[in-house]
Image (cartoon, rainbow, N blue to C red; front, side, top):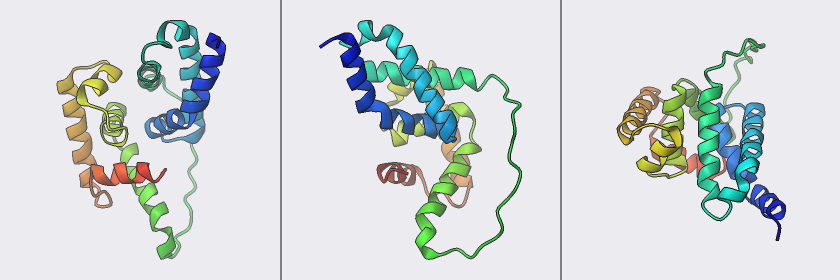
Length: 172
């Protein structure tokens, strides 16, 4: 099997998880797809070196660093301002409401807090692994995670990291 075939197979196998991670960081479907595509493109240039090692960890590192460096650039594009009208909540929409509550709470976190909380609890990575991905110390990961969780708990609609992990398991 050639390196190109290996890479194609890896992309097919990891696309969904990579796009989910990118969405958790960007909180925007289009930006998440762009981030995932950029990450796979960057991975392609190093594929021959990393394919026999741990390409999934290398891909996560690319996503985290690309996301964090991309956040430094200021985007001056359009921002939608219309708000939907108030509606009566149907009990069948509870899952959607939970997803929106998590999305809004995560959006209020700093990019590093969001990345630390998501990688620790939704991806179930160790503090050391998250520190390596974010390019910081384990202490910084603990601090970002603690502050992120405190901010999420301050939002009355967020029960805790178990809720985030539970929603991720359900594909939300």
